[in-house]
Length: 492
Image 1 (cartoon, one colour):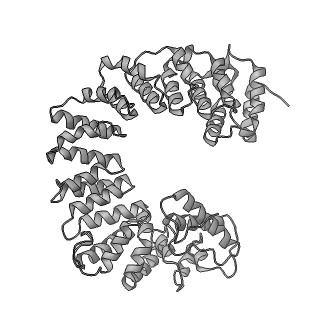
Image 2 (cartoon, one colour):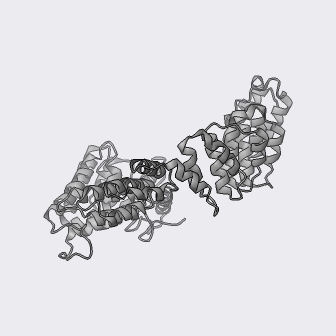
Image 3 (cartoon, rainbow, N blue to C red):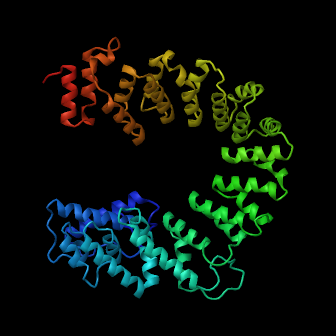
């Protein structure tokens, strides 16, 4: 298993980090003295490590002799944890975890120790422990550590020279400790740490620079953090500058682009809203339609022109046309269902479904076999209201594991919606599917079925149900399998 280390990105994959922490705990309990989370490990590594050690030791697992401090700091007995806090090489991350301990003597000693560490090695401690402190702050007794870390960062920022968010081209004195810590946290792969640092920065001394905030908003992958930068960019002096708005309208996150599109009106650039009508985000398209209407234009007419483009319409233009909600566009959308581009066909189907337009079952059934997965998905969604009148045998033929995955999933969606024996047959047929998500969906459906003969009265006899249960026996625990066999009256 890959371990979290300085080269990993803690917080980006909490499931992977937690698994790494559990693996390190198991290795350390087996006597591997080097299996303590390394410097730079993410907060989820440390939390999972501590939880795993305590869980295994509580279950009777013997600790190695002599036990390293990392194990004794996670021991289920409070007096052992408290004594381990006196070790000079106790990892500061585990000391932080113990500041939320349920035992008051352990908690008080850990808090005193961490407070001393913050005073003696403030910059290093803030860098190493802040992401973990943000996780711990969400616990019942986590307010103390969160307040101390926020107070330390604010105190440093208040004593620092000009703010770190100034443009790099501007002259500035060398960065102080607070600048270095905040800048590092703002680049942290842990999104909570980034949000925390951004909030501190934007409420700190100095004036935020609109252009720099817009740059960070455009580059930020986390929507919540990007929203902080966007709001700051639009509130700062110079927010109406062309460079600021261009950065926002070109961002990767839809909410940031939408804010930029909306700001075009204030900047006297409302005519540019037409260029955003076919944005890939529905939210941005809605803002663009508002902007066009504010400029006296008709977004609907622009959409019809975009969809009729001889070079081929964008699927997002097709989606935007459907969002306008005018009845005269239904025939145009129906014609696009036969378009050679799969994304356009899918967008036309989605638009027709959005408008509750009637389409023949035969047309939609044929589209279940479409080579484009998005088209098959939209066809299956459009068929859901008509699922009771569809031929289940036709759908069951498309469950063959040798066929395309997207066709199998579309047919399975419809059979599950139909319910009854047809849904159960389909689920049993797919319990060994090669696609993990399809396989798990099928197994969940099999396990959730009550397997009572009365449920399938008139659809299947007990013999068929018993045969289906036998085929799917491996997805049940012994007790659950026995319960279902007794319901069916199966013996032996």
